[in-house]
Amino acid sequence: MIRFGLIGAGRIGKVHAKTIAAHPDAQLVAVSDPFGTAAEDLAGLYGATAYKDADDIFGNPDIDAVVIGSPTPMHIDHIIAAAKAGKAALCEKPIAMSSDEESRLREGLAGLDAKVMIG
Image 1 (spheres, one colour):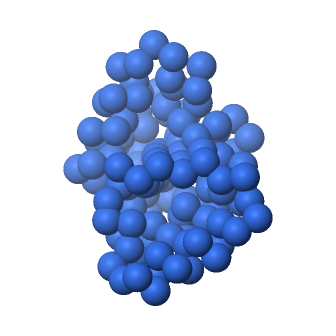
Image 2 (tube, helix red, strand yellow):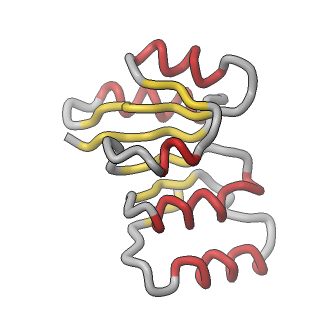
């Protein structure tokens, strides 16, 4: 069983939550979203815990992997935080809005045993 944390409870977050919940070897453990009741609403549909702060996802030892569906300007920071926490990460596209940001990602992942996939 792979236990997932989901960052972002918007349109794409809802798609990923449904997909995770439908897989017999996956469990949606937590959802984070800083806006309104988005995290609570989506987490409630799947019996997951809701957080306002994505750092709660990274710090949760019950989470193996993270799906990142946050706004694009946050992708790099979220990918690096997931890698530093030892969690595999799937990040929605685009990864960044500039090649400088992509370089920052490579630097941030240097020396880590990061498992990152861009969707």
